Image (tube, rainbow over all chains, first blue to last red; front, side, top):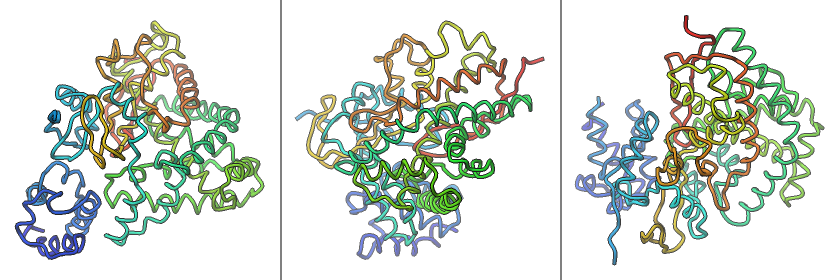
Length: 78
Length: 402
């Protein structure tokens, strides 16, 4: 699965956690700016695992300041 | 206002498993207590700062139960069994329940100490005899990781097959780590559920067993509900808390001893300079199997000259504190001149099993020395758990290389 294929699901999940619609620019915000906490990130990692069938380490979100950077790192390893 | 000491370090589980000291060395260059902007938390690496943080009344443990609730709500994954068991672990909470549980487990451990050690001694000799008979084996899987559940299982009269199964199922991976993945937490909850069911079946065969009756008496004495379910949950917690800590301490420590002597230990090495009993605590320090203690500031405070804001999170790296070059004369080798360590934590969450753990390690070393010459073999595998670093596989052969 590519990032483009996963994108609508990621937006849907993130929107559900944050209880608001997600725009592309949200992916470039820091987690604090986004209003996401560590549970959101662990849960999003799980959603991505379910979606792609690949292990997604929650630490990837610790290693990157924004969701976009973390996703780029994850999908770059495809 | 003074600026924060910062680091650009970010936690990487695989690096931390393979070579934590490299990460700690880099962190030490930034300071004893440093702010990671990327990770959005404080990292504590010196022994003095770790001791101060662990003892600070306003630094509270991370609320794992809020984490479980949140994860369940967000993902729909059932973590009920995991939550039930973690509700018995003293170091996962502060306040009145923490005090009650800490006293409860202290009383239980004090009471079972002698029969437990007797069972552990027999288990240790049997497991090592099997390794000796095969001319070698896996010191992690076939010995270190099985000791604790073997001892408790033997005390309760469980059959050998059940004891082995319990050893495999009582891993703490995913259960007490705030940053575990949901997949790991789901697996931990599945294991907890299976353990609860199996232990209930095993206990049912001897419902009046004195060990379970004593747990019941201590539950009543602590003012907690005493029934079949709470007794089983308490027993499951005992199993869960000892398996990885004892297994990790022994597997990492033995690997360190082997590596420090070029991969081969002879009987003379076990008495090299120090009596065996003297190296036990150093082995615990070098192993530092528990990796991280998480604390959250309940109010603004100062630690090592750094202003910690209310709500800030701290990661206290216990293995880093235990190899602090300022605190130990020989931080990277086992040396009886080294100062006391912090592998058991500190403050109000100091490990309740500390004294018993020291006895277990001393006994295990005493027994292993009898194996004679031991050689490290390739094929070591680290366990992937975040909260306890340990070997999943530590192959050895007995006898000198021909």
